[in-house]
Image 1: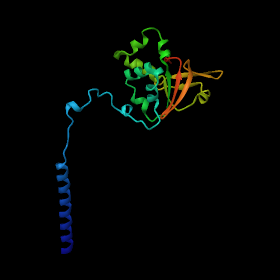
Image 2: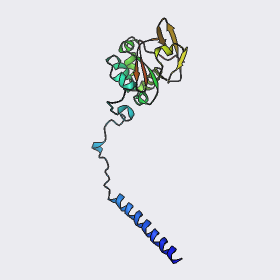
Image 3: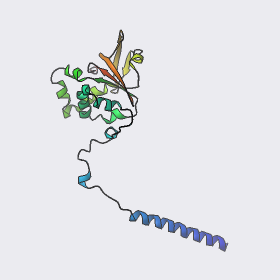
Length: 193
């Protein structure tokens, strides 16, 4: 009985010693609080979209950013704060209108959509260019319509060897790390409700 009490007492002492030493170690660790000058001024530019990675296959956003024919699309994605949505694991199909496609819209449309007060409308239009999946042009020929990220559908039409989504012709397709980018010749406008 005395041996059991003695072991219990020694065990308790060692446990207290261990807990006490852990507390002292954490108190002695130097903690640093970032100063106001070390916090980035633009705190909205956070998330997965802003991590630089030179080794993996470019995602759909990186492909658009790297394309000189998609600067208007990239500006619109940034104005709508949708960068992080385009870098998620996907798979995503992005129907990416060219600068010429945006230029074909009525004069002043793009400038108006890029205004902060139109952010929601711009986001709705851009989401109408994205759908879940990773289908090449040939596979898309099997569809009659596809559901877009804005919860609306886009009609798929096949004319000869060409595939049109929402009236926009797929002119090129680029595989991405999280899906595929289909370059289209027209801005796909959501159906008016």
